[in-house]
Length: 616
Image (cartoon, rainbow, N blue to C red):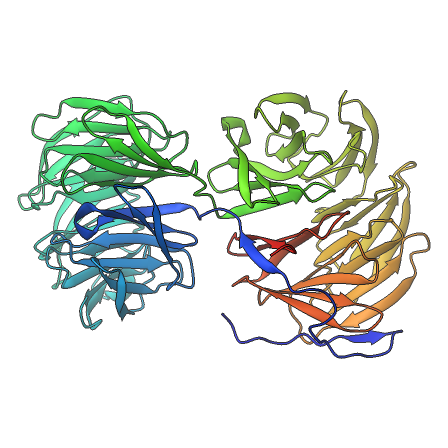
């Protein structure tokens, strides 16, 4: 957590007051979802499963299926996890470049490895002594896993003799069990086998002009598999540099590959959520596993070859029986990396859109998902909004349309196709009868949510509309663009009412529940405006400048301000007192507060959504 840059507010037009923690009751954060699954491994001789997620490392019991622990040693999303061949050492890497070494039997952190290479793939040798770390464009780092000492770093940025051609872009890495060689895949269809310590390429294995998406050694190191974007697999002899066979079937782009512990089976996880099992020695197709609905992000066999674990962007972690091909157990709610959200007026329901084109519906009383919807038409979503009573939601996307979906069934029930450019902002009216949508051509459409009949088009002549607000009384549309002004429009006539001038670029705009006040924020100030007259009523100076997000609470005298350090402060504008909500680790991107009740929802840059619950 960053050192707190404490916000001080100098209330102009109001007596200055210091911020103290007595303005509102303290709230405890509930983080929605368990985090997107990025990788996994069986540990503790196969009795446990360690899952690398955007929220940390989850440890599950592989036999009772109970949650054991969530390890939060990483400050950022854990992107990769690797276990040594002897099963005693685990390495985890995060999005900030930190690699941690763990005792696989106790999951106690024992070492930090920092060789300056941000990890996208990790490799451990059989004994867990050597760790290889891949950066997609910066190079490969080789370190001693037990001491953290860096032995060598190589790659085109570090090699003046250009052993690797400039412009190469890596996609995957794996280290052979013996630790003497490693393999990388790149976007130029090449699988390169390297001498681990001399940094010399030994073999350059070329496919059919398709990007290599994943590489994996067999457990004995005698075979190397390369997966491609066209859904094919090539199995090589890595020492001889020879192609053994090509596996082709009804597979989409390959995203993950795992060899079984005895090297008899290879599992291939694909972009469409299917997992294909093949016999390594003969290349014969074995079976396909089909419970996932989104891209496979993690695969691992149990040491006894009885089960296999798989993770997907659909939010599910499945445990499979290898013999029957059936799911033994599913861990749900592995959702994260939320891109956007909306909340119903009563604060009981949250709509969230996450990585993998998944829309989830959350119950704020329990913090649990009610529904999870994934559909190919949800891809390319630019904004979402939920009906005030929660029974439908609307999405705007790159196809220039706004589609309306049933919250319970996940079925599309209507579509508005009046826009001619991508729709990037949507909001329901307070009664749910109308929808206001804005497209990238700067035009705002007001239309009937039930019939999709167009009521009015407002041409703002703006190149971008970053925020769109529809007042609860239906009279005013407020927006901010990528400039120093905010604007208020008459919703009935389409006329521009007021331009709200600022000294710096506006970073957010919101409106009070009674429609009487508008709040705007810049990097250094928060402004309160009279909706009816456009008059500036109050100006609050922040100790900054930092990116700020500001909104009203149901109490018109209390506002919420989020900053670029991940803090949200509830401020009583009449007294200058405030309460901090501490829970995010990164800058605040949005804060929403229900019109009734005290439900607060916030999202930070790292994709985490927090529900602030008064009842805890």
